[in-house]
Image (cartoon, rainbow, N blue to C red; front, side, top):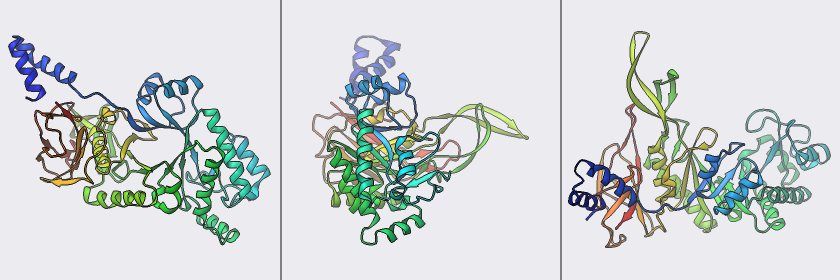
Length: 439
């Protein structure tokens, strides 16, 4: 008998009457599967609050903008967190906040740079960027030693390398590089720079950003590789005009959802590249979400037109879609808002165990991947879809499922996955769900 029905029967026997619904809810909550450790999180705030620290302590891997105070580091390490420091792989910014390393290069070793004559626009178009010449052996050795020292000072286990590959370097500087080193491809030299760090500090873990775009160079030297904005994004979403409580009438965008037909070949290609060049690399997906708008039931009159009033809430539907879609391939997903601020949802701690079967399967209009302790389901359509999740891959003693989105038992092994419908634009987006076994 499913958990909810068992609890309801018990409450009836005990004569709880009007309190039976509460008893069902409390007992069902108590029956929720135990939480696991989240796969990874990014947090780029320069200071961490007590709430931030408690949250980040729940993850195995955490990427930070800069080194933390020693007590915070020790607290996270005691919780089993592996810390990564953020670093720009191809160069650096130089301004009044620059440290000894940047000042040393510009002042004493300009020949180690691709733009020794002065800074260029850079990724943020601020005109303060310098780029390394990765084929200079002395630079590579000094850079590896500098990063090793930073890791030691920050008590971090690894480095997250952003701006990986030739696509992050201005074209005219790449031309300058080719003129200097016609026999050494830029990406081969840059991958060698990472290897030099491993030689200097063999225990260092390497986390690359979008190394899969040049997999033959970067995936072999990576322990983890990241995609950005493949499942969801704050760029390209549906444009809406909405009255937001406390802000008034605002023109903004909803979260962009990549459709299943578009997403499937992209992730399949990334997955295949990893299997070909480094089967041991762990693929992670950093997705971005915009606020979701929740109706308040109120209206406001603006220039003769009544507008329903909404409040900004967490877009849990987008988080679960990205998480479930990543898990179809056995990958991991984390969602962020704005400049990688914390977006909190308990789905990250769903302990699914290892994936089962060679891949996902399509059934009854849904895409399903079974795990040792549950299943993930994606509804790619704009309509409700119903499927029975019985399978030889599901243990016989599993009688119910915990719905991590609804935060309650399903009441059996038959699931209904509704599409994600925007309360503002009424656009129907795909949906993702995570289910855990109940016995």
